Image (cartoon, rainbow, N blue to C red):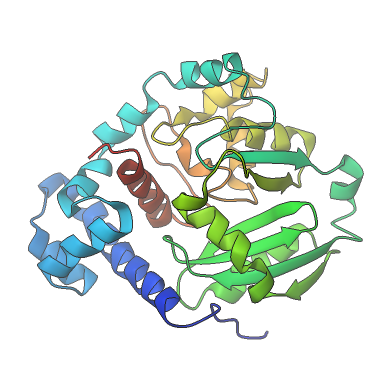
Length: 293
């Protein structure tokens, strides 16, 4: 298999180095958060000095390392879940169930037809590129109708992440086009480009049930989370929490369709297709964006 590398060196490489340090810090914090470790051992685990760690977290998420550590606690997760069902009810009451401001990224979406999904993507032309992001290398897949796939990889896992996405639509044609997908990647991860007047176009490729679950995820605002059971109730399938969990795990447009905001009833992070460390990173990063320091 061809070895794939992130596009464009320079500042983008710096972004990936930032996440690599953050990833190691999160790994240490996840093991030792009950002890509320001092900044020195966290910095040592991340391979930076304490001053560098402080600057890193400020640059990466707008949080101090201490505030980020607090954002990873079970108490914080329970706080995100407060009023889980009412979060979805409020979204519906506000008319957010259709195209428009579905969440902070400003997304409009459409679903491919059941026939297009059953065909395994036959006749679809998909472009892809590997790009740096706040959460590691992002595999960005674009169709003529908008963003179709978004996956994540740690160093050395880029080809496996791409293959994972390609198996979802095995009969589609894929063309590597990092230059062509760069603007879309920037649109996703640069918060300065999150504008209501220029919504991000997303195409959802899945079964009818999966698409309904993914549409529900789009209603969860940044800084909040919901339970799988509440998602099930919101789509009139109250006994389908397990099936909802499976659909959440199959979400092909990670981060944009915020499956990281789906938690267990007690605030447990449960699984995440691209790794629990990355899920913790997303929730911590979002805590900085909404100013919950």
